[in-house]
Image (tube, rainbow, N blue to C red; front, side):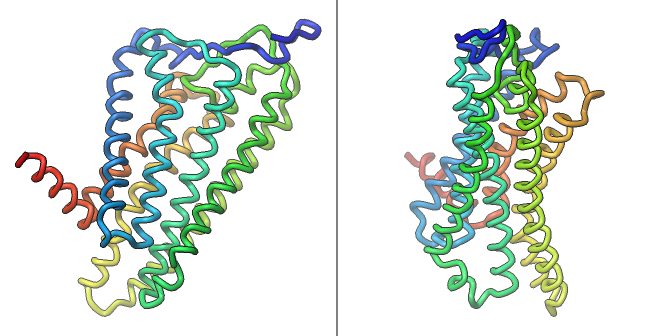
Length: 315
């Protein structure tokens, strides 16, 4: 721990409070949180296993779904173990380096998930609006390159967040009023001017979400224009059904993201406990919800899951 003029340049550790104001209920809150984490890991691992082993699912839509499942496992695992340790064993201390690593994974893979949703929207657009050239436009090399671009974008936009935190001077207050190391929660503890940090953090969030949501909206506007021209009602319903899962998971992710983002900047009248609770659900609910939605709404995956259940019962 280095000290200059009474300011701590780099504290050895921070203290996570969990959900401020609800400390007495931590043990009860941990039950659904633990359930969501377990379901997220099991559900996404099942999705990954089915897509890997079933050759008929080796198509663009399912490759992107694999990316989403892998991202969800990493995202939920980046916060859940430490959060549950805090709730169960009062293990609220987190080393400065561990805090930076957790911050990196949270923001990097949140950005990655947003990018994957954009890629899935593009896939639905090509599949519905240009079905004959779907496999040509979204060939395996194109999918790999698109996935790498999404990951590289998230990496290079997140790395500066960590460097900005390392250059800050911190005072004696090491209490992070949050359940995990979020960027804005950590920068609030700094003694120095954090205008650059705040501007960069908000700019990155707005650019990523704005860019991805714009492409998603444009994709679905063009999809709707094409679908309403289909001659039969059955064809329109089939087209809508292929997009329903994607729309559900997108709404869940972005509604929670929007609430978390707005409360950071403008939600001064919202209780801190509600803010932290929603921010925690933002990292736990979509990873649990996504495999359930795709498992129920996607016939090929649903059939494979039911076949696995029947096989295990016979054994």
